[in-house]
Image 1 (tube, rainbow, N blue to C red):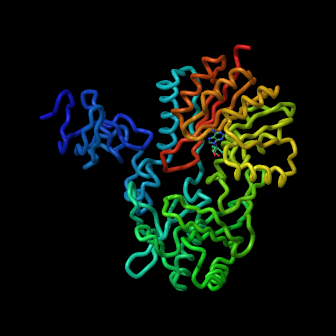
Image 2 (image 1 turned 135 degrees about the vertical axis):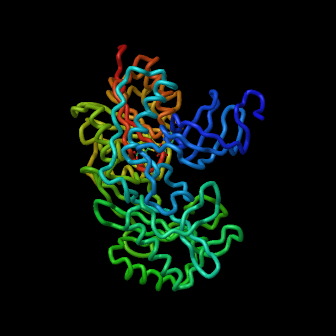
Image 3 (image 1 turned 90 degrees about the vertical axis):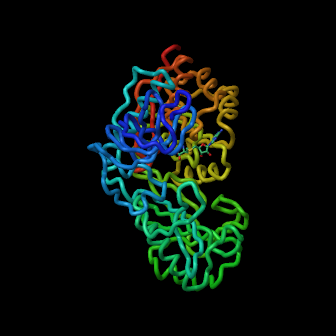
Length: 460
Ligand code: SAH
């Protein structure tokens, strides 16, 4: 019997209609208003499900059988380990379906959280070929009876599953990881044992400059000592002739964090380079750099178009990272001020400005919500403010300063439509208006959704 007014019980099997998809990628069915989340079920489907968890306000079900299939269902997702991995959530949905879904999610959340109904949300800009797009692989290594394994953590666990290929990863990175696995096996480099905190090789990080062909491999080890170091280096050079840089990073802590504090160049260049549009970037072992440069260009072009610069403007780029957006904007602005909380990212940003001979950019380390009010107090006024905050969105103090500073326009780049919607409401209440919103698919087959919005000042 169902408890209270919850219409389902644990282990009950029932047929449901899937009405929606959560932003985590689970199908949603409503039973007398009670929401049941069913991973791998798609909107428009009729499905047989088993209730596996019943909470007060919502429950979870397991998909047993699809009775009526969505036209957008992909019967056999191309990746063999899609069900175990958790890295991708949407391979069972056609790419076109994914793009439509992301557009719908943005529209829904703007309406529900931001109470913004009268704004254009364009169709999501997707990739022509939505596979093999990632330029960085970070693969955990471990040891099982008789051998090294290199794979991924099984969803919601710390169990490593062996993997030979990841279909959203660039082939070059796949090649590097497999080569290191063979070489490490040959030269007796043991995989890390997390429980005992023993063994050597913890992670292999491969980074590829898709537009320059440069390739970096980082061996993250528990100790400074790397058995047969010289042989390992020579073997990597021989097996991967296009390698540009071989780096060791030492992480001796018991931690989930991949990198330790010490980085040593073993062979080759300290940096690899890549370009986005006409701007060149230097990438070190630990630099933050966008993982899908092709779509990053699409996103930044959109941001630049929304910024509508003529060359005479002062622009602020808040949450600027290594200055990628700042340098893009600097090509068209009089002066750009970038601010970012991570000091190493600002070091990279300054190096990148020099590399591109751009001297109309200033970078500051600090919290955007402290530095920008301080700039304001110093008399700095921006014609345009670009923000690209982490998932939690903009700090309120920053939004307040934007409202006080009254730039003609704000360009909001967001990786979380829910906090975007919340912050747009604050800006709208402060005299701005959201004009248009463009979702861009930076991470095909995953539930991540990137958005850029144009916001204009309406009350002077
Ligand atoms: N615009 C960059 C990076 C955006 S990611 C790009 O496109 O590559 C968001 C960035 O905000 C991260 O680099 C993070 O370190 C930084 N950040 C987080 N909280 C911050 C804060 N309070 N003030 C300034 N930067 C912050």
